[in-house]
Image 1 (tube, each protein chain N blue to C red):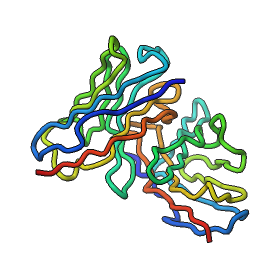
Image 2 (cartoon, rainbow over the protein chains, first blue to last red; image 1 turned 180 degrees about the vertical axis):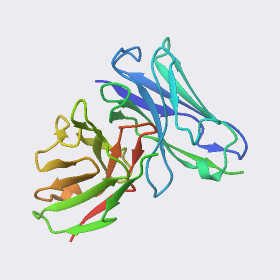
Image 3 (cartoon, one colour; image 1 turned 45 degrees about the vertical axis):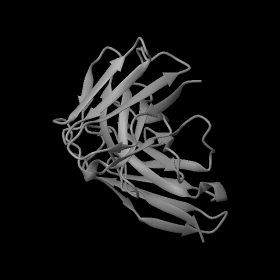
Image 4 (tube, each protein chain N blue to C red; image 1 turned 90 degrees about the horizontal axis):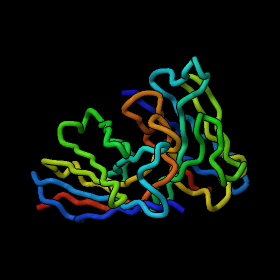
Length: 121
Length: 113
């Protein structure tokens, strides 16, 4: 059964770059059906889509974060990654990796457990 | 961006009673050529990631109990829990995927009365 697991530092200093990796197990990230996603949730708040990547490397970003976001994929490691530059306290959140259910414009049917990232000096 | 607005923000329901959550989009999320509404519903319990319940506004995800149902079209949607169980205590989110960026409602917290 396919599973997703986020990893990365839990504490990032302001103005630095947040880097997270999502490891996909139980299946291949190089599926022609699925797209892979990063979503975040500030403490006690709602959900925000950050961006999506296909195994070929095609990316789609939230315009509100596009200038600071890079999502990449490494099919040899069955992983995809998030980099968010110039972070501030407003970027403090639980970061989830997830999967689109059946195509690019679809719901998210599989989620990692999430990883909390705090931006603080 | 399409703004998704849920009501109410919180809901207290007795065990076995019906819970109804509303979700309104700032523009229609009905794709007329396919007659599909690009709307999903999620359940999030404390300390857990969201769980997909409903897609295409009314199609239940595999394994989701049939007490959960979705309805609506265009801009107005509803998630109904027909008989609330203790394990249904959670925050529920609607989400549109009609246009990018996909956006979520602010959430509705369901608790036991």
